Length: 224
Ligand SMILES: *Cc1c(COP(=O)(O)O)cnc(C)c1O
Picture 1 (cartoon, helix red, strand yellow):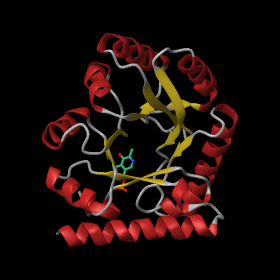
Picture 2: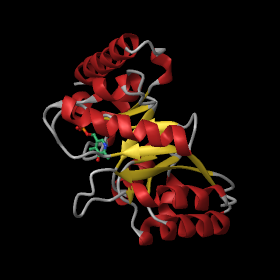
Picture 3: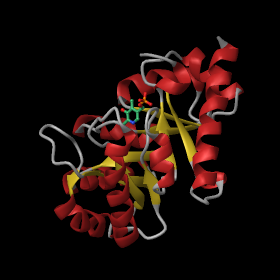
């Protein structure tokens, strides 16, 4: 098993590198977030031994169990799933980067709880909903500027960039326009900031369109 995760991780790093080179980008500009949701702590330990340095979890509760077990300083911990109001305090304690801020209300609550918890700075990304799908999380493009301005005025939150969870298409070429649009918005609203986009099946297109963080689960840890 150890070698399997190690080999899969190496293959993913190779895919990132090749896509970066094709796009004329330094491979070091792209960070791999190993998405470990639904995998046990042992899998994370194996990935870390093979060089993984940042893990993405989509549920606060599940992440808490792993972080208790492995340690807050085991790796960088990223929250990539929707953050519910009643989990904000835990999230402020547990995560290095929250990818999924998508409303002024959530930003206000994070800001207040950072103050209460003595967390001086909390790096965040805004999750953008470009497709307007029903029941999707993320802020509408029309409201993005307002939320970014709000976060810029928060004393504790640090706006680092944008995140996208696009509609699912088997064909990555169908996702590419969404990646391109997120990059344009990043250039307008958080120039030089992070672009969190690209998963197991479409990371090449995301890297070619400018991703600085790819969130990859299945291709590293196998099926969930
Ligand atoms: C699960 C998940 C991923 C990883 O998806 P894979 O297809 O397994 O690589 C990336 N981003 C988010 C927000 C996720 O929930």
